[in-house]
Structure formats: C-alpha cells, structure tokens
Image (cartoon, rainbow, N blue to C red; front, side, top):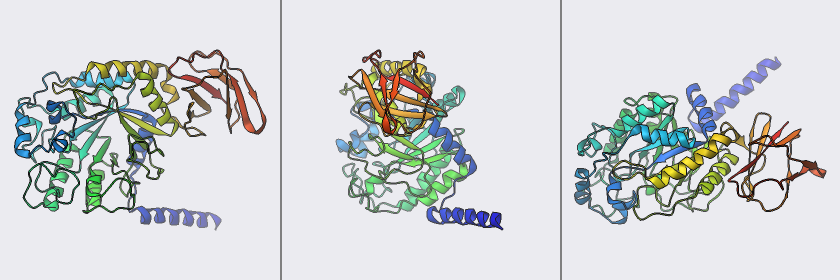
Length: 440
C-alpha cells in the first residue's frame, strides 16, 4: 500500500508540474540540457550585412536608415575571406564547446539560403550559405551549433513596428500583420531545423521591443508573440533542441535555458537583468570589446585576464559563458579577437577540468574569485588576492589541498565553525588564476 501511495504522490507532483508550466521536456531535451550545462564556454558570432558599415549591428536603428537605402548594402556584402574551418578552429582552440551564430538579426537580413525572402545572403555577390558551411564544420569538428534568431524586424512591413520601441525610422508606412509575420518566422525556423543537421539551441532575441522598458519585470508584451506555437514547432522538429529567449524576464513555459545579457546571474550591472534565477541551465553573454557587431572604432578589448575572470565567475554561478566576436565584413575574425581567444585557450588547456562539467560552488563568486565543484573535488579559483593567507568557510570535509596546476601541496589549518586558513604565500599573484584543488 505504501508503494502505491508513494507512486500516486509522484504522479500528482508530475501532473502538477505539467499543469503549472504547460510544457514537459522530452527525454532528448533533458539530456541536451545536461550536456549544455557541462559545456561552460561558447562563442557568440554577431555578423551579417550590418558589418559593411563598421558601426555595430544596430546601425540601421541608430542612424535611422530607411529600408530603401539600407537594401543597397546587399550588393556590397561579399565576405570573400570567410572560412568556416578557421572560425571553428579559433573557437575550439579557445576551449569553446559550442557556437551560437546569428542567422537573422534585427535588420531582417538572413545569413542563410531561405525561400521565405530575397533579403538574404544568397542575393549578395557572395551567394553562399554561411550558416550551412559553419553548421557542417561544427558537426565535423564535434562543436555544437546553435542559431540566434531575431523576433523583431526593422525591414519587414508585417512586423508590428507601430507598437515596437525600435525601427521607427526605417520608412515603413504599411499596416503590420503579425499573422503574416508569424507564418514567416515559423517557415524560416522550419528551414533552419530541417536543412542544417542537429541544432543544439535556438537563441531568440527581441521580445523587449514590445515592452515599455527592461526594468519593470511585471510588464506585459504589447503583442501576443504566440510562443506556444513557435516553441511547439521547434520541439516537434528537433525534440533535443533547447530554446532560450533574451527577454530579460524569468523563463516562460517552453523554454529550456535561461540567459543573462552582459550580467552574471543575480547581478544587474548592465541594467538589463534583475530577473529571478530559475532552475534551468544558465548562460551569460558578453562582448570581447564593447560592441556585438563589427565596429571599426571600437578598440576597447577585454584582456585575457578579464575574459578568464568572467568565465570562472560564470562557472562559479553554475552558468555558461557565451563570449561574442563580431567578424569584419570580409568574413575574417579580427586579429585582436584571435590573439585574446588564443590566450584564453592556453588557460583552458591547463584548467578546463576545473570548469567543464562542474556545478556552482558552495559560495557565490566573491571579489577574490569563485568556487566550482565536480564529484569529490572542489576547486578554489583565486583570481584576486594580496595576502599570504586565505581564509574561507568550507561546509564539506576534505583531506587534500594542492595546487591544481602541478600538484604542489597547500598547507592549511582548520579553525572553528568549518573555517580553514590556507598558506598561499608561494602562489604567483600575477597568475591569471591560481586554482587550489580540494579532495575529499
């Protein structure tokens, strides 16, 4: 009888969860979530027609360029130096496990061979499907491929631009028709999920265009995006494919991971976050310089130290780090990015084990660094310290403390209330990251 009661309670709990969310992930999706959580490091690629102007991916909006003028760029986009293998090699060399590529950004331009619009790369002098080439190379090299897809559009007349916050200066006068626009998006998503092999995630962006602001998390969208239709289509076409939406809100039914833009989970330094942290897999995205898309004037490059710090702190929160590059209009990832990614790769070759497949530590990341955990091991990442002693309250017992890099024993003393003091006088304060491994 007791077994029956327990089974009944489990069933009730499951049914309650389904009723609350309206979405039950498939076994393939659950497995994909687990793999995603282990990845910890990915490459974001903001690239497309806007790169020709060298003023960031928002140039059409910021400069209020009318559609009739912006379309002239289609004849100028000819990325003759694009090489999918080179891009994947750079990502892989940095220790990245997946790539999230822009398939269509807010200017509406499609980087792939779509039958839904002539506003695509196939009608440029280049006439090659870069999405297919990169997806094929990722599959070949064992890197996961994810597709960014814009929900908003500054180009099309049927997008509800009347109620949107952006795209007001592109010269559109026809009445919008969301039913038409929704059909267009669903047709394009069907192409992306049936022509390019396994897709690990769809990364949506643009929901915020139909909100008054990004700060009041209780605001409702001015339009019904019909997410249930969109999300159901994706999960039907590829059940394992994860869905994330950069709406700066808590996840809604149908979404499989939660993202944070320019912020670590729980922080709101960029002003776009502040939402609650869910139990879903987490990801934070950030730029390598100041811009997402290619900006010829932006030389505010982050140092390898800053990039590793962000990667480690993200892992300390149990989150992935999606680091962006904005390639040049010729299709080349600029040398400043390549150099820094190679330096990060030197770190991941040595310390990758301390972030890949780990969970967030027993304490949130602090000014001094972060903690990651895996199996019977705990990793203390000392990113910033001045003293020769380091004290920390550690809830779990351990027998061994050693420097991860070379196994050198680290002396420690246990105090009251599970406080431990480590002797770190021998550590090099100029190292990007000093990792102490604790073993139970």
